Image (cartoon, rainbow over the protein chains, first blue to last red):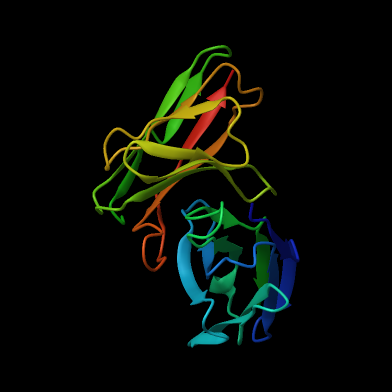
Amino acid sequence: GENVEQHPSTLSVQEGDSAVIKCTYSDSASNYFPWYKQELGKRPQLIIDIRSNVGEKKDQRIAVTLNKTAKHFSLHITETQPEDSAVYFCAAVGTMTTDSWGKLQFGAGTQVVVTP
Amino acid sequence: DGGITQSPKYLFRKEGQNVTLSCEQNLNHDAMYWYRQDPGQGLRLIYYSQIVNDFQKGDIAEGYSVSREKKESFPLTVTSAQKNPTAFYLCASSPGPRGVNTEAFFGQGTRLTVV
């Protein structure tokens, strides 16, 4: 089945700097890779996602890149702000051709702290 | 609130008792999921269901059971066989894997404390 590893577990950055979180996945047939943000005491919410037929996607200050050959994908946050402080989770979903079909598997999460 | 509701928000039970957590969605989603969240361990998948009357075990299914008799509902029972049940439980739903995968929405969670 799918296994998703996420690094680092914690990330401290100065306001205005960039933050990068990396994830690797094991099932080469996975085709959907969402990123979720969970603020303290709140539910996780989708911030960006990417599909296996795309190499990069941007949405304002956040971007996600996908390297299918290496089976890894990354979240990039530029010009970080204090409100970016949260736990970020990557995830992967398997295709119909795998045992992981429909299985939304998350990484362990990254605690991001943005200091003013 | 995204149309997915978990109840109750807080739940206390005595050790050895079974307890059922409710999860209801009105988004007409096919897929539903249960996760357990412990500090520093992320979101661990307990069970998931892609369609009514069908569900699969996740990574930590031991001591838990589910049912999916209705599209809108996916209750989770924490049995007395679960050795460390105190945790924060999150339910999620998504349109499902048929066709193109899309966003999953989460409930507000249930914090279960077993004493």
